[in-house]
Length: 252
Image 1 (tube, rainbow, N blue to C red):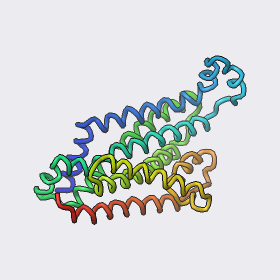
Image 2 (image 1 turned 120 degrees about the horizontal axis):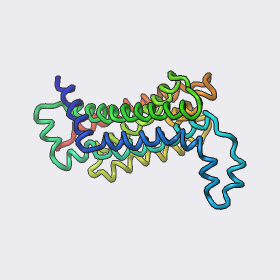
Image 3 (image 1 turned 135 degrees about the vertical axis):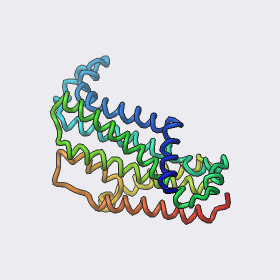
Image 4 (image 1 turned 60 degrees about the vertical axis):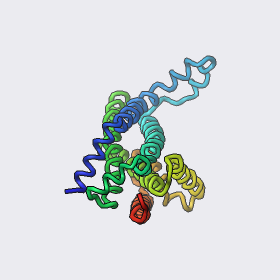
């Protein structure tokens, strides 16, 4: 089937261009390092000249500190990578002329766009699973074993958060004539959503609430933010649909 071949080609392209490798290394590193940072932060601060007094004020690290470090580090770097690795997905193909070659096979334009999104989403899923395994292992080793189901849910929420910005940047890459504009769309969306997130009445519906939820899975397991899940899925679908409507009218 054409769509399966297109997705397979895009995943191989992710590996050939080392994008998948970069994701694995960066997210795997922070998955491993986050529990270590949580555990040894007082000792690290004590090494700084004059930091002994501050180190004494830090409470004894707990497993909750490991969760907070993991969510903060992984989500921050993952969303940045989501924007940077998606910015050239379409516009770069148009610049090089390879989009015309792909679409002349023939390959439907919707399939072309969807294969890009699925391949990038797959790369992030694999990388977050690797980060999750490393983070889980070191959390068990340094603290105690967290609930495996909640730990998986934590990483899936971060993944969904990344998918929002992959879809937004992919839309920018479809509309734009350069990668700089595409990355500007991604970061612009990040800033706009952060601005709206400053309003408490709106914040609970925004994608950023997925990160809040992932950080509270262990401390407040009864608190859920399903509205942000549906809004995030809606943003993804809307961006992909808008990208398709624009791309099918473009002359390549």
